[in-house]
Length: 231
Image (cartoon, rainbow, N blue to C red; front, side, top):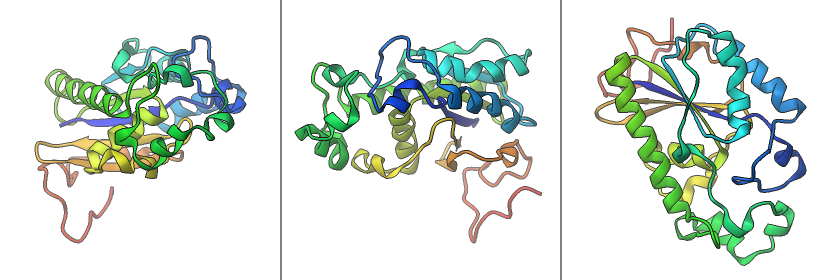
């Protein structure tokens, strides 16, 4: 089954301001975020990309644009609202420093499966829609591009953490243990038996993620004692 590269958008103006952006329109990358996006294409050089999917929000599309410009053979990113940011409801647009004093904050931190944002969605709903989207895209890409295909989904911090938690078999209550920085790449190779989490929040070189014929996860079995790595 294919390998998914989960790209978090570059640093945004809302990140810099400490604001919970949610689905607020017009939230762009800041100068650092634009530089991170420009660097993403180089980090992915040498990795064949079969398909690109994105949250419809501006900061994700802006993060992918330099990569798409560098890879004219790629189709424009397919936009999937299921990969969009959490619907934070009444929390949207508020400073994180202010939200930290809300009683719900502790639930979000310690019991995410019980957290529902007023006027928005629950983190359980977020997890369900995003994991469902990833699994469906994975099957589609396997059919269209083969089991060794590598594809990209550009999304948001909580979305990516929820997908990684699912791949690791973690209860949603533990998804806050996962950290993904702006413009980081997390990699999951899906197989018929289990997902293999290859990277979490990687901000460095990604060259070793290029498909290899001897990939240990190809059969779905883990290598007892540990993988030998790319040659």
